[in-house]
Length: 415
Ligand code: ASP
Ligand code: MG
Image 1 (cartoon, helix red, strand yellow):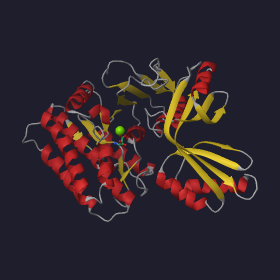
Image 2 (cartoon, helix red, strand yellow; image 1 turned 180 degrees about the vertical axis):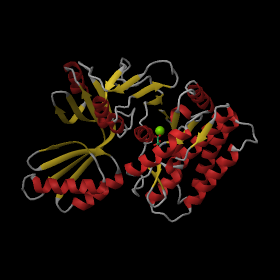
Image 3 (spheres, helix red, strand yellow; image 1 turned 180 degrees about the horizontal axis):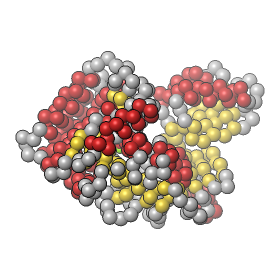
Image 4 (tube, protein in one colour; image 1 turned 45 degrees about the vertical axis):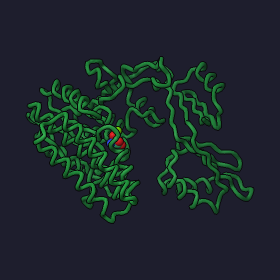
């Protein structure tokens, strides 16, 4: 069995959906499970609806505009009496209904934001079926089982594997299967999400449990490049990459693939293809077991970074006791360190700037340290650096923190 994953950009319009369905149809002789994200910027729009929840008028406007977007796409794909219009309406009714429930924020978030993938998967399944491709719509929540950690559901691998193995390969006999990325179901039977951009991870979970022969992530780029071509036009495409290299790239912030995607695939040696949906015949990048010598420098830029420094208050030095206190609180508020550094009396970390988590951290530690932070920064990582690149970054940027190891150069820079 093969697993395909299509992200929001590859299904953002009727034309894009038609292109996607052509790609699927050209693989229709293979057993295929297709994982889809929400269409275009739908997830962001659903987040905006939640943010506007208190302001009834604005929320209603946002809902109507998202409904219009989906209906306009359906109008281009289907006759006006098609059942899909009733399905879309029903999902929007459910959405409005969820907004009135008294869940705590994260639980509500998952019930609302998951609607994007339910909409896209229903529309795509109906369109494929209309193109005379026998299709089955699969509810990912019946298979991807998580705990109740809303907005970051942790996978119950044993149960998930059992459920997937029991059904999916059998259902793919003679049918293309369409399911949702990003969503699962908690042990208390509520919808959960796996974290933003989590659809790649969903594809990897299905592939792992199915012992799939490969996963293909279809993107709006030709594959994995050694830099963002929008910033560095001479960026080059990797034909292949070892799992370890790809995993490290996601850790440092390469956004082409969700960080959790590689591990399940590497554990079963399932190759991951990253291919262009505009040029499906081009090979793209394959991530698999391979050894490459002399990898070119790879530049990864993580925006929206925050430098937090903890200064000890009473002339004690930074020591294991106060470090362990900081780490404990970081873990509690679920903030991840992207880079860290210490001096005699101060410990500095760089984290993604997430206001609420940061406020909770400061609150928990303000009695122990003098805490300062600095936002709007960029963390640049150059893997397998060359001296010329170092020289360029060192002269062009205002560097706040810098680390060099044998293979990697990392610098935190101010805008
Ligand atoms: N639709 C979700 C998001 O935008 C999941 C995904 O696209 O992978 O975060
Ligand atoms: Mg997306």
